[in-house]
Image (tube, rainbow, N blue to C red):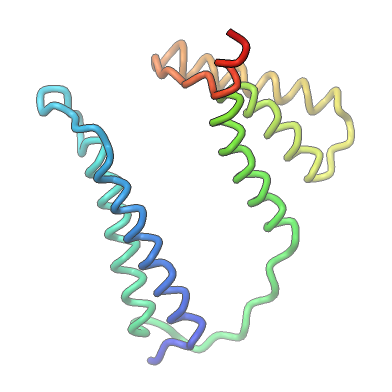
Length: 153
């Protein structure tokens, strides 16, 4: 079977993404062998990226591609949710994980149609608190405070 032009572009863009992200994995700090558990911090992402690249090559070559009806257009809510998620990642760098998490959950809830700010705030505080307890208290993960925290101290 032959891949359509769109399929080939998807595969090519995916291969470019994989190459860029794979290059980033070589900037990871080396983990001493004595401390390494499982695949290690750099090997697992590389394994996922290589798997994605192999599947992208299969798309470009048309392996397993069958003729389908064109998919319906992506609803605007999907793009809006993606934009809010990208903004969340930037907010983590600026404000820190926990403030960004609260803002993300409240903002996404509003975007998805919840109008009760009290209900959103309560659920965002509960979920952020649960995440904090799990990651910080139980698993011992530390999060950077964010760039704006330096301005306050």
